[in-house]
Image (cartoon, rainbow, N blue to C red; front, side):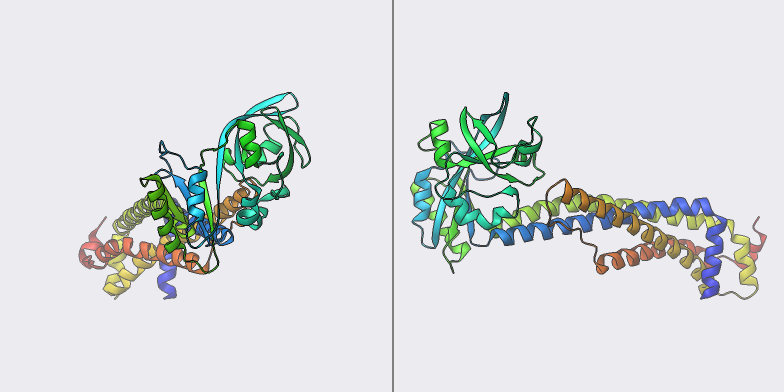
Length: 396
């Protein structure tokens, strides 16, 4: 076995540049696959952790039959009251938003301002929101002219950094900042302001605002799926049509995972194409190696080398190319994955995000790259093994 390995290494060294170029093809494919799996599984783990914190006892109702549509008949307080009457619902409230002028000193910016009741934060988001709070606190019962601002509002959109306790003006009404959110990585969220719903209604003159979403918290022991069905029935009866979407926490998690899955499949297909190109490169390299070493093969057969021994030399050589490409590809992928994690944690504000670099992934990728090399080298190795020794010795 050592002799086979040494002969394979000798063949690769003699064709160093060609071998390196062939290995690069495998490196690209393996690094793409490992990076994709590690980053996407990291996102899935982070999203699952996020929804675990959010709780399985939350149901969201949005206007329209999907996230992109908005019906002419928006969600209102009447719908909130209807949802609260459903058995299994402990509490329900709505959240609304509009683009409003926000002023700090002499600087003015049109920003999205959300209106939400302090009770919603206390009962629905209290613990959940603290995870994403950079400084300050969430709303409390009795709060009115106070605001929680996104990270860009506090640190980027105005000349001065805004701190907790600083005053801002929304439609020329004075508000005191009580909280600053960590960077979310979403431009709209980071550039938004949240204020109590009563202040929002007064500020915009809306006695009955149109809600972007209604959030319902379930009673202890209530089944989310059963309650979601009851909410659908109740709202359809109240509104006369099903122009809304009811989503449990599990539904939201499945939707996001489905989107991630589609993106992962697209990238995985691209990575597999890169692997196939790399495999074709190995096959081409091995065919050229067989052609260049035809006379050498004839000599080995003349001194008693078997077909299996000849075939094994070229299979080991192809396997080494595949394994080397896999190991270098993994090293590159791990480095890129860690850089991605650093960027997401430090610039995306998702402190609980970690890429997945399990032993099963790394070992699986290494074995896969070796097997790809063996498969790609099989036909050239078979051709070498079947060469006629007399004809091979005559080859120039």
